[in-house]
Length: 221
Image (cartoon, rainbow, N blue to C red):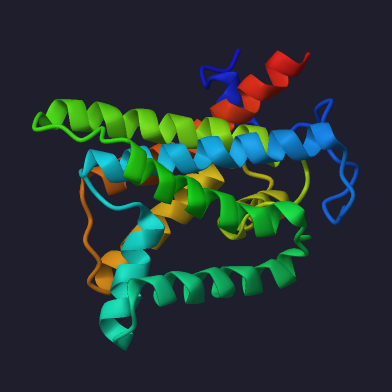
């Protein structure tokens, strides 16, 4: 009997009742579209919690900051450039985009922006901020589990995760951790700022996404 929890051994995004039959589907069922929007909104709220916690930037923002420093770009443009670069990696991995790929960028960014204006979860207590950041990682994992199961196309970074998982056949949790840790390493070398929250996200997001997928599959049974 394996001592590794079952959710950490997940190797595929499960098919559930609301899953689309193909990613490139421009006329998805209403239920599928609603779960896509719900998952991405939860994802964006989780990201905003990490920002509210003020204990460190997420790995991809660290990378963008490092790129911006070295090329004299804005962080926003560096984020855009890194997203395009990630999409190019999709080609050899034979990943398919979809409606979810587009809505991923729009809804998550919009949710983060709205959350930053409506809520304030920051605290003078480092422990509370650490708790908020930890909850944020779990919430991102849950949002990922919901939106990925719609099979309407992942976001750029989630697509890299699922593509590499399919090629390597390693569990999703470990593939995501390797990606995030690598991104943090490159961003740090380039001069990006790494904090406790960065490491929390890098090492925690893989298991959190796997747990989200596991939870959604179990609830759907």
